[in-house]
Length: 264
Image (cartoon, rainbow, N blue to C red; front, side):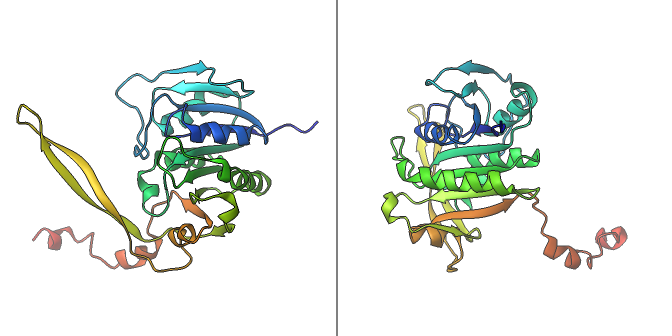
């Protein structure tokens, strides 16, 4: 009898979010599922981990399973660390994170708790995928995501991923019949132009709300932003080695070891 793959499921929107419930339902068709997810929303936490406060995890029963589920007081990265070191009895064959409520395309990947959970699994040598739907609302409809989540996951289970690579999958917020397919993409060059809405409490103390606009600076037709705007699911292979390898040669021409000249 073939042993089913062990699949770790996590997210950043919290264990009760509709996105993760959808992801769990798809993963239950592919393997044995264990869920370790935050007990409350952790969006925008990036790769934060808990160092100076107590970390809790307890088994919960959100629905009828058959998955086992644990609610964790920490960040998405904490959830993956705790799952691997304390909860699971063996290394998972796959980690999937999401389905996130909102885009993690282009620069959003830097801030994403969803993708940071996948990256944490990748650091541990576990094939990992982050899934996101371009709908920030709590009651988002994830039905159109299901066949694409399943297709990508099945391929990763079949082919594996190179060490140091995780997949960032974003799904347009449209009906399934309008999705044109899957595009393999690069990350678009885009950023947020941020502002702070400054206000005052009744006691006269200043406080701020972060606001801003997303600006796509990339006209390429091979990017995740182009794919999503044109009704494709985008798949970006992402790496967590942040070394700018192309600049090492130039950097070696600097006189960094000439401390006397540099301090003059």
